[in-house]
Image (tube, chains in turn red, yellow):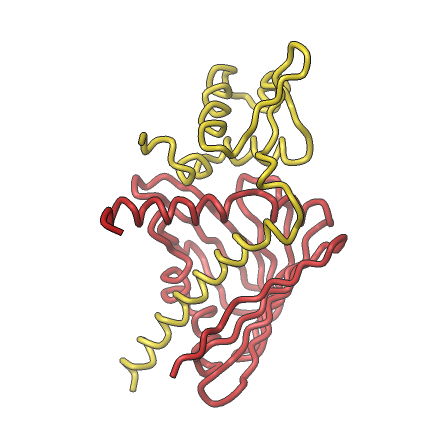
Length: 162
Length: 108
């Protein structure tokens, strides 16, 4: 039996942070591995419109990382980078995140990996932005919505009967 | 439908993302937007046209000036625009879960 596990977002008015939580049908070791192994990370960060590449990934305290996403034509559509402040296997990652070529500032991300049972786990992701205005601007931008709309459009093209 | 007007194509361009960010906080004229870029004015106009055709930007006539602003429907309360953001993460995490369940099965 697979229970429906929804991702929850908490974004209170007037605050400069958000909380993203999600429960997984996975042991905590595998949930952590998906965030620590660059070969696996790039798989779930990719989508039908952009392929994620890991240019650099030092999974350790004082390490840094660089990611890049390209479209079908090979054009870079997103790039991101940051440094790792804490890396405790199966427990915690603290890192910074910065989107390349975009005036969004640097955000601090705290990932907490929690074992629920032997086969289930929970991710608590706390994201702190530089300011309230920056957080709201980022959330207001229709990027995610655009991607979902494009996804629906792609489904229509691939499955015209539906 | 012209695929070039696909919303994803519209936001895949870094200049167009920068334009959306510029007008997120205030409505601006094409000239005021163009002043922020080294790109030629006609190129900026083309970007504005694409964003408008994709309903990401709205035009508003004030006197003799046309102001561009982000589509009001995308700019309501936080509760309204948090859902697409949540959906994006949910899609990502669903994918993570599927990949790791397959990984677990191949190791078992």
